[in-house]
Amino acid sequence: MDAKFHRVPVVPGHANVEVDQIYPQNTILVDLDKGQTQLLKNGLYSFDAANSTVRVFDGKAAVPLLKPLPPPKKLLADEAYDCAAFRDRLSRRGTTPIIPRFGKSSAFFASA
Image 1 (cartoon, helix red, strand yellow):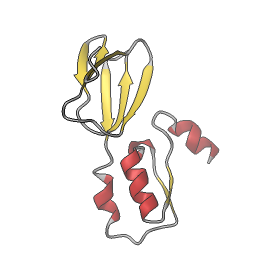
Image 2 (cartoon, one colour; image 1 turned 45 degrees about the vertical axis):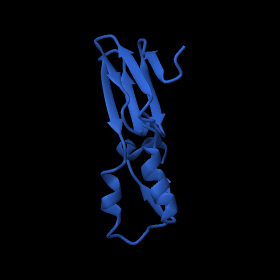
Image 3 (cartoon, rainbow, N blue to C red; image 1 turned 180 degrees about the horizontal axis):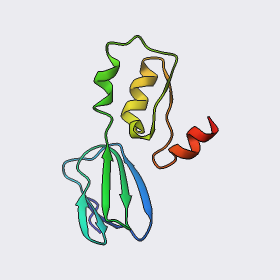
């Protein structure tokens, strides 16, 4: 097996994959029923095999929104902000992130 090339099938269901680092020499392909996608950047990927859809969250849009504000002690956000980059940025500012994992928001906010 080539260590630089990986192919992953997604069978019926839902899968979340957090990618921390992809090297340019690596190829990661994900097979869905109606097509194939390649992971190209860091972030949280959400795969839905039933609909052959992929959503990517990288947290880059959220960081510029934080700069003009003083750091709060805690920040409550919905699952759209669930990615390691955003959580790390909050922690470095001294803020505790209160963010449900992607796909779990209704249960999270119902118990909060």
